[in-house]
Image 1: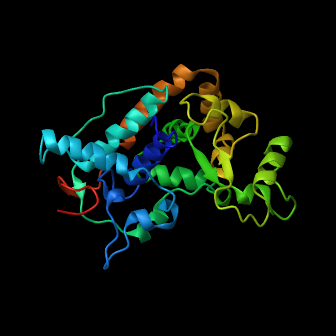
Image 2 (image 1 turned 90 degrees about the horizontal axis):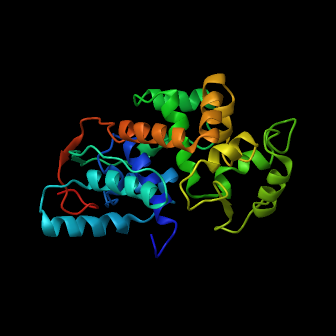
Image 3 (image 1 turned 30 degrees about the vertical axis):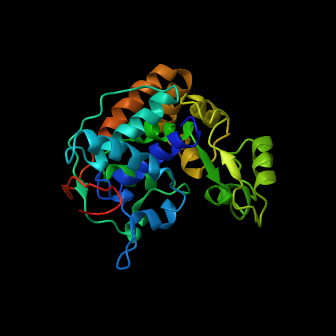
Length: 272
């Protein structure tokens, strides 16, 4: 983290993308083979990075305690540390996950997209045993990180037949985003941080969301129903309430299992 300030956001997102496909079984860590395109090569996961952090932790753990700690557990613990070391809450992570042997790029289509509306988000979370409160609390993970233009292009160009720009975006904020991401953007690294303090784990994401300064449609979607909007306001007003809810929801999310975990992988990138 001291060498690369994008690591915490990367690990938090990696754990989320692991858990939403086949449960938290470390399947996102597996490399593709000649016979199989793995999750990490699915379109939503192309921008995942910092896999080396998990490899280094695994190597250290194996040297002290061989064949005991799964890659899935290491990722769950790393995600917790990502939040805690960024100034956010810490918590006890339940352990005992097993590593899965199946990882398919095609299944990454099941990940919730940044363009989703509330009913699509709700369905994605409900299918995995997560409630609306979990959706709002976990969206607060967007307090860390950065998005490339492609994930919010839909809000700033050709939004709908009546508007070029999403009318729910605060106008000067929208203008800044359009400036960074023109219609035919050619700069691959172009994009925006998800909140104004992108390396600090805080409740600024919720404060900005209320002001019309969120990046994704899926963020803005949280304001489209009374239940979720009330939670957004609660978290915007109290960082403590957000932290408490985030911890509860992270423990819930990190316990999603499809029963597919079968082994303690020795190398997180390859099945035993």
